[in-house]
Amino acid sequence: MNLNKVFLIGRLTKDPEIKNLPSGKNLCQISLATDRFFTDKEGKKRQETEFHNVILFGRLAEIASQYLKKGSLVFIEGRLRTRNWEDGSGNKKSRTEIIAERIQLGPKAPKEVLPPIEEKEEIPIVEEEEINIEDIPF
Image 1 (cartoon, rainbow, N blue to C red):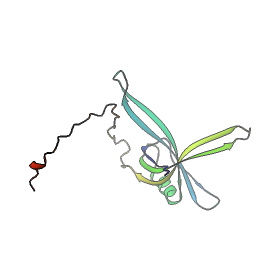
Image 2 (image 1 turned 120 degrees about the vertical axis):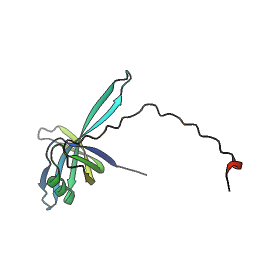
Image 3 (image 1 turned 180 degrees about the horizontal axis):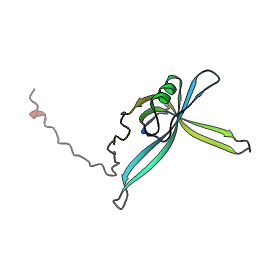
Image 4 (image 1 turned 90 degrees about the vertical axis):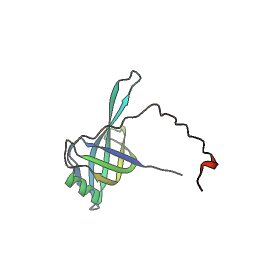
């Protein structure tokens, strides 16, 4: 079995760029920043930011270019794709992108702050009580 699925919630780092392909289909490129909050070994809270290149096609491209702008919060569901090519000098290049399959626009308030979700290194183990069959009322 194979699975190529990506879920991202982040903010646009610049305004969307829309283009029309020769086929007549719309293509929109957005750059998305996602943050990861965690506690390091010394107990200090840390933040790590990743930047993602996202490609939207067709109606999703139109919606993104119409409603999103730099700083907008958006939820992206899609798949990973890596493109390889040679530049004019013969150097090999590659770029990993997310091809959006679904999007959900965030709140309209641009500065609305969402609470960070922190990763926990230790997950407590909860011991379950043993069930006595005689205690069941039926």
